[in-house]
Image 1 (tube, rainbow, N blue to C red):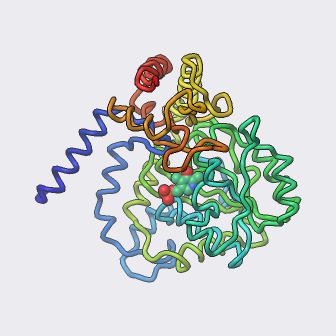
Image 2: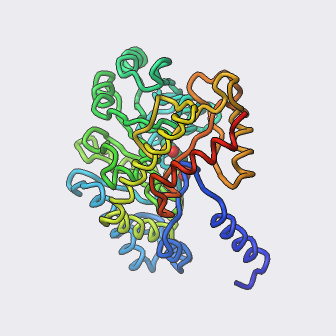
Image 3: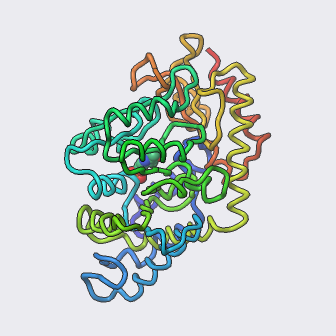
Length: 390
Ligand SMILES: *Cc1c(COP(=O)(O)O)cnc(C)c1O
C-alpha cells in the first residue's frame, strides 16, 4: 500500500487485535479468505437490481456471485428455495431491519420489540432510532424475578396493542428464545413474526441454538457476529400467497439502497461456505460450552450473572451488585487497562444511568475462534475477578 498513514493504522489495529483478549459479544475474527473477497475488484462494480434484472451492463459475474451467495444462505439454514427467499444485499443489520418495516409496517404502525435497556436493539423501535420515529414501538422486557422472557405477559401485551409486527431476537439476552411461543403470540395478535437472529446466527447454523425458521415469517441477521463473516446482513422471507418476498426485495432496492456492495456479498458467500463445514459446527458447540464454563466460574467467584447463566455465547454480568461491586464503566475501563476488551451494558431494571450502567456484556465467540477452550475461560474468569475486585 502506498498510503503510508493508513497502512500504519491498519498495522496498528492488527497488532492491537492480536494483543488483547476480545470479549465483545458482537465481534469475531474473519478468515483470510473473507478478507480477500472484501478486498477484491468486485468493489468496482455497480449492480443495482437483482440477478438477471440489473440496471447496468457488465453484470454477468456479479449475477453469479449473488446467486451463489443466496443458494449458500438457504442451504446453510436447511431452507428449500420453494419455501424461502433470501435477500443478501442489506449493507448491515440496521438497514436490514428498516427494510423489513418499510415493506410490512405502514407509517405510524406498531413494532413490538424489546426495549433497549432490557436487551433489545435500537432498530427494534427505540425512539432515538429512525425505527422509533417512523413507527411506534410497543416495548416489552423481561420478567423482574427470572430476568427471562415471560411469554404470558407478552401474549397479553400483543393482544391489547395489536402490533403490525413482533420482533424477537436481541443484543443482550443470553437465554434460549422460545420461537414457537412467539409464533402463537403473533398469530393471536394477527402480527407478522420477525426474528432478528443477528447475535446467534452462527450458533443456529452450527446447531448449537434452536432455529427460528420453523416459526418466523421473516428472519433478519447480521453476518459479522457469531456467523464470523464480513459486516453485512441478510433477510430471509417465507414465500407464501402474501408475496412477502417481493415486498422485501422492493424495500431493499429501490426502497432504501442503491448499488449492492458486491465485494461484501462475495465475502458473505465465503463465510457461508465456511459455516457449513463440520469444523464450524464444532466451533459453534465450543462457543456455547465456553460460555457455560465462563459464567459458571464467574458465579463461583461471587459475581452475579443475569438470569443465572447463559444458553448462548453471551453473558450479562452485574458488576455493580447494588454497590457491593463496581459500576460497569469502571469495570470496562479497568479491564481494558488489563488487556481485556468488553462493553459496559445495562442490566434489566438497571438503577444506574445508561452511560454508567450496572454491568458488562461479554461473549465467547471471538476468542473461541482463537482456540480458547473451557479451561482458558475459567482462567480468564480468575484474571477478571482480580481486576474487578472493589
Ligand atoms: C448487531 C445487531 C443489529 C445491527 O447490526 P449493525 O450491522 O450494527 O447495523 C441489529 N439487531 C441485532 C439484534 C443486533 O445484535
